[in-house]
Length: 301
Length: 316
Image 1 (tube, each protein chain N blue to C red):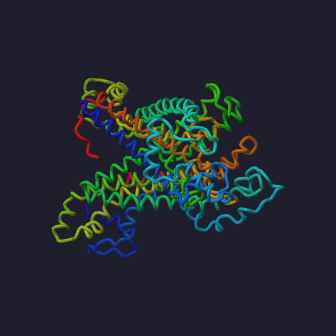
Image 2: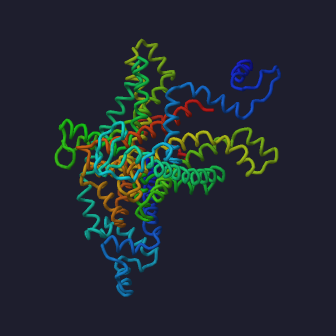
Image 3: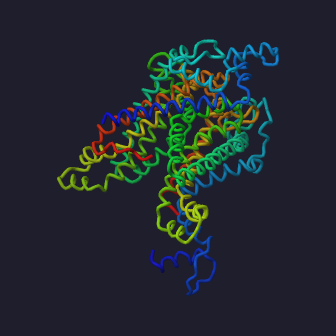
């Protein structure tokens, strides 16, 4: 990008009056420069809005739904979607939209916890393997090969059998299943960056390996890992929903998205919205997360 | 060549052994008290037992031995096809598996064929079509395919094709008609992955010199794509087929539960619900074995399909 166009881009973004002196762009200006073109894409904005809605629902469900998720109304049971009940009601007359919004707290938290476990474990293993090299690397990679040979859901099922049912055990089980993928990606990135000239320069400049790792390798290995984390956030929502659909999630009356879908199965013939609408919401959230990850992947920085 | 094959087989066996050990570790060492899980799985209240009975139960489940002894006796049994006895059903696990396995193999086989057909068809079409809106749509479709939970698709298909239209049975495991909906459900996520990888493969291949040469010879775009592009773009799919076995097995658990089919997947769901540890261990080992076996076959097939690959030791 020629220098003049850089200034042209920067000028409208910053509220500071344009001066004929070159000044380094501030951190916020750089972030804005990266984000602004994305915000012009309607698909990206819509996806972002849906994900923000889900996160908001997880943090403060009371803001988005005013009904009580556990208030039963036997007279209004299995009501079809309408103005009073956006998603209809379930077999006990509970408002499904409210149930979905409150379910976000469990489902999104579980997915975040799973990705958090995967990030910590995967980054740790990947950095150790990529940095240490040699025997330790070989052993760690063999262990990861073994973990990859166990189908994700079955590994999660084994863990759930051992540590019990509930939102947190399910999140742990899903998180452990994602660790190997993270470890591989991180290791590949660390190996790539380790040989780059600036790492060599930092080492020659007298930086310790720890300092090199924290200041030079990690910030640059972060990109692909962040994309993978976003993708896996979607995958984690799906996996935790699958496990709670199978009946290993939170105990009733609390309900995750998977549990809501499972509960509606019985009424599929007479009241299909009870399981299909919460599912549609889940699909919208996961699709949005995947769309964001893909956009970030296609437009790095 | 033979050295490569033997090495690869040895590696596969090692991975399999590792997978069994990981599953054993998770199931037998992670719970604080496997005895209480086992007793509750067999329907006995642990509080109702006297210390003498507890000791007897411990000996019955082999929990009085040291961890290593238990591990080796279980491994030895597994090597002989003996996975112990189901706690909840009181039957040998191997006979349970033998009874349920054909159902799942049939379902998985049909699903894998379907997913390949759909995925390759979609990917091929996506690379061929020039009309921009349709091209965009075909490029985004795979992403939708793996954003949709398997169980939700299953319920949607049941609602539309079984309840509304009445074309196909909603549940059950008899006859070919009952296989259609579960197989389609199970095929969708894998098909999406295949389509996406094939589309990316075409993008990568399109700028290769041999494509230019093919055009220069006077071939049409369709001919170039079919004869020169497809073969090269489709190579990564082979590795993926191996990797998708894991997803198919995972999906089978959900699909069989939804469609009430008597397969391994449903057995797994029931076993976890009852915390039937030996059954879970056996199913995890069997699916790991299937995964390792298919990937071994793919690796052995690769050199035959792509002669450019030499058997230099792969750096992991």
